[in-house]
Image 1 (cartoon, one colour):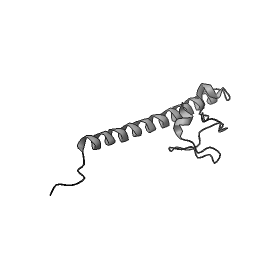
Image 2 (cartoon, helix red, strand yellow; image 1 turned 135 degrees about the vertical axis):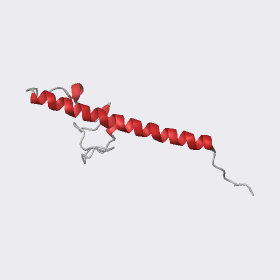
Image 3 (cartoon, helix red, strand yellow; image 1 turned 90 degrees about the horizontal axis):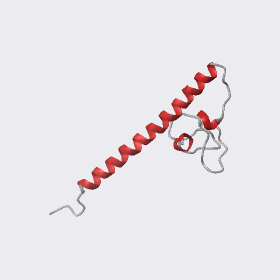
Image 4 (cartoon, one colour; image 1 turned 30 degrees about the vertical axis):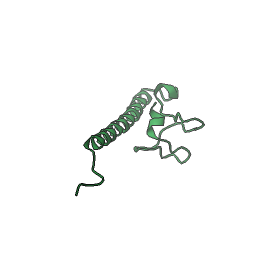
Length: 91
């Protein structure tokens, strides 16, 4: 008797491709945040301690969020008043 719910390989392939794309996007966002932190550290070590957040910052771009800097290394900001995705900080 045939399986009443066969798995379509095209759907499995599309789901797998979507998961890979999401992983790449997440990794890219965290890479951007890390690069900004590194660049800010370089500038600070050369005496440029303060500069506009829009220059190298990672403030949250989510509407009505006052988080000024991404906290953490994972998918979401660890600041208790924020908790938005890293993507909201990397744009």
